[in-house]
Amino acid sequence: MRNSPPELHNPGPFQTLAGNPSSALNAYNTTLLVDGAWAYVVEDKGIWFLDKLSTSTPNGTSVIQPAVGPGRWILEATVPSPP
Image 1: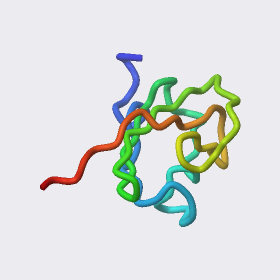
Image 2: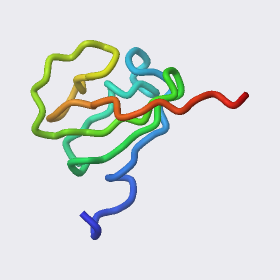
Image 3: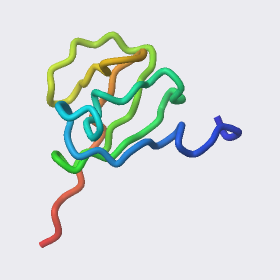
Image 4: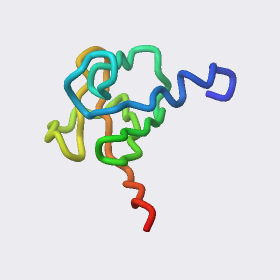
């Protein structure tokens, strides 16, 4: 994992969870990403981690299925808005 390029660890940021193929988390091909890669999504201010072995049921809020590639994006945390 340490010898792979940074873009295989943290793609993005993404604007939305789903929708526009050029800026949505679910549209990103996960095939070349490392297991445990993370991404930030502006729409929900979420930090998402890729579990390449997961087959969890996608629900659109805490589990996102990529359109192409293995695994699921799992919501790890949200970043609070500044006061």
